[in-house]
Length: 62
Image 1 (cartoon, rainbow, N blue to C red):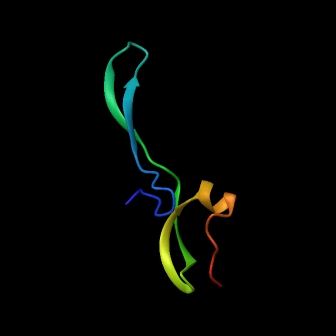
Image 2 (cartoon, rainbow, N blue to C red; image 1 turned 180 degrees about the horizontal axis):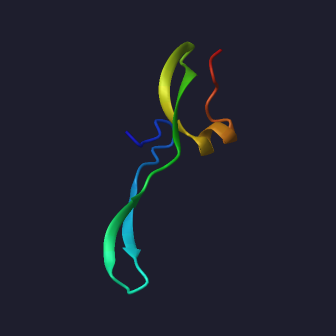
Image 3 (cartoon, rainbow, N blue to C red; image 1 turned 90 degrees about the horizontal axis):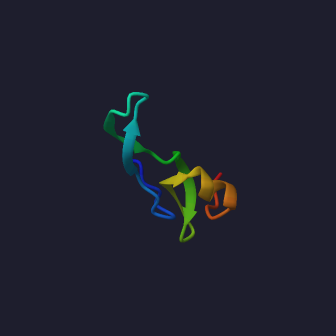
């Protein structure tokens, strides 16, 4: 489950190109952490990307 529940960031697909220019599919996963956050006044476990955690979009529960 590589999807941020705050901003919706998820996996991105692309093509890996080797030195001999052979192409194969690959994916980039966002850096998602499972954190305990305050949602509507209650603490709940959600998946949040580190960009949202650093930006302060998630208030962590203690």
